[in-house]
Amino acid sequence: TIVILDFGSQYTQLIARRIREFNVFSVVLPCTTPLDKVLALQPKGIVLSGGPSSVYDDTAPKADPKVLETGLPVLGICYGLQFMTHHLGGKVVPAAAREYGHAEVELVDPTALFHGLPEKLEVWMSHGDHAETLAPGFRVTARTANAVASIADESRKMWAVQFHPEVAHTKQGMALLKNFAVDICGAKQDWTPEHFIATTVAKIREQVGETGHAICGLSGGVDSSVAAVLVARAIGDRLTCIFVNNGVLRKDEFAKVQKTMREELKLNVVAVDASERFLGKLAGVTDPEKKRKIIGNEFISVFDDEAKKIFEAEKSSGEEIAWLVQGTLYPDVIESASVHGPSHVIKSHHNVGGLPEDMKLKLIEPLRDLFKDEVRRIGRDLDMPEEILERQPFPGPGLAVRILGEVTPERVAILQEADAICVEEIKRAGLYRKVWQSFAVLLPVKSVGVMGDQRTYASTCAIRAVESEDGMTADWAALPYEVLRAISSRIVSEVRGINRVVYDITSKPPGTIEWE
Ligand code: XMP
Image 1 (cartoon, rainbow, N blue to C red):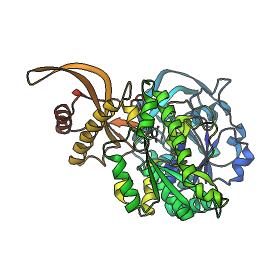
Image 2 (image 1 turned 60 degrees about the vertical axis):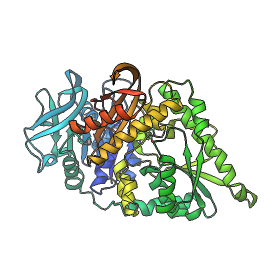
Image 3 (image 1 turned 135 degrees about the horizontal axis):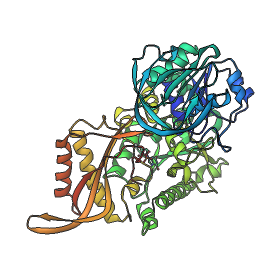
Image 4 (image 1 turned 180 degrees about the vertical axis):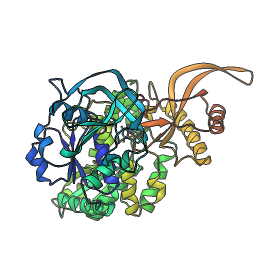
């Protein structure tokens, strides 16, 4: 085991998942976890995560400084480097120039951490502070043009980097983490998808018991399908899946998903068309967070209603549904609320943030610690069809967060058509699996155009296509001009109500993938 102490960075869980990627088990604990609890896990090494604060602030998240005296190998990342420096007698101050985004690092005095890596690394930086004076015993092992990028004190088994090896933009980040976990710490590489499936299925069986029933919200996407299949493995037909048409699904999605879930995954599916109910509540609402809350609350209340109906029979025999299965992933959790403390709220994802206080069902979230591609790996081990596993992510609040301004049935229909064309052309070009997501967004902007001899005054549609590994960071995809041309000309000529198409060229951060 490698223990990661979380100082509140948005990327903390990403460190765990990178380490799991080379099959070493790793867990994230709040930085305030008492040291004896950390050591009780018998870790082979400790990683100190990044964080949004400054070590010298009174409100900065604190770990027991004795964590630096255990004799175990320690790797500090960003804030972790500053924490080490600060507590071991060095000095951390605000940097004259904040480093943010891509940077080039040059190794000046490489250690085992950089074993097998090139002399120059492309890395991702995100910090406002830096180590001005190193703690005694430490030396600089790598630098950027402006600052210290890595330090080490091998006699105390301490290594630290100012950049983020866990994000995909740091090209050699995985190799670096592997050098630490496997070579330096000697952790075993025995944590695999089969292992995850076996332990998760056993845990669900124990939670739900011999007679308990569960219901599951299916969306048709990877997450809820994998969650459902895992739970079905554990409790068989005591799982009923509910698939809700919330009125903001994509074109033909309601029918298609039902077919796949029943015929391919052999799941027990109840389909509910609640689109009028959702669209009624969304009428007149333009605030993004309000839309999310409305859809979240409505979704749960449709569930409650359906659950009551489905289990009427069980009630008469004294049994009750107690469980609601959700395919919540780690990025949903981290961006909805702070799990371990100080990371900032960005969007409230409906499947976490919008649950009403009086919810009567208990939650099973078997994928809560995982990232999308880990879920795909699990799905493959469960023999699920590629068509489901390779589906691009689609947000719970659906097209509602891609329709800026008011969500009306007419605007939903317009976006469904535009989106279908976008996806069709992306698939035709063989790019569907290469990009993380590709979709259309309907803007509340009208502009003047000319079609035939007619003046038009209609809506603008934005195309968003991004490359990403996990949805936490993303780059806009450099789609070929021919593909953009095909999407644009088909949308303008085939979709009534849109007369202009633009392409979104914003990366995440600073943008988010969805527009709301
Ligand atoms: P953002 O827009 O925050 O999105 O950069 C990151 C990833 O999460 C998806 N997303 C959601 N998924 N419920 C979900 O299940 C939601 O409310 C939600 N909002 C965003 C988004 O599509 C992207 O893949």
